[in-house]
Length: 101
Image (cartoon, rainbow, N blue to C red; front, top):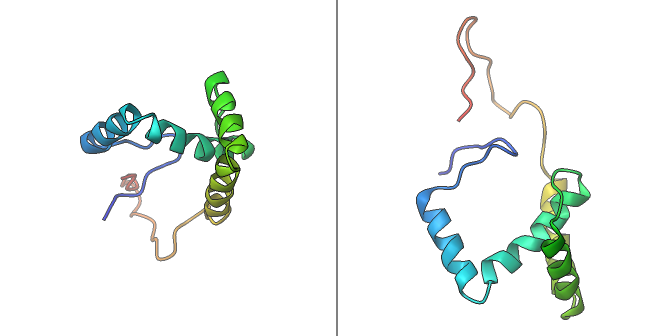
C-alpha cells in the first residue's frame, strides 16, 4: 500500500522514475498520457502548462478527442478529492509532530 503524499510534494520511487522514462522513450506515450492529467490540474489552478504541453493537448484533442476525454476522467477524480482531516485521524499528543508520510 502506498503512503499518502501531499499535493506538490509527492515523491516518485526509483522504479516509477525508470518506467516513466521508458514510457517516454516509447513514442512519448508516458509524456502524452501525462498531458491531459496536467491540463485537468491546470483548470483547478494547481499547475501551469508549458507551451509544449498546450500544443500536445490540442493535438490530442484533434486526434479523436482523446486528450479531452482523458482530461474529463482526471478532472472527475480530482473533483472527488477531499481536503481536511482524513476519516479516523486522531491528533498526536501535545508536543509530538504529526505524521506527514
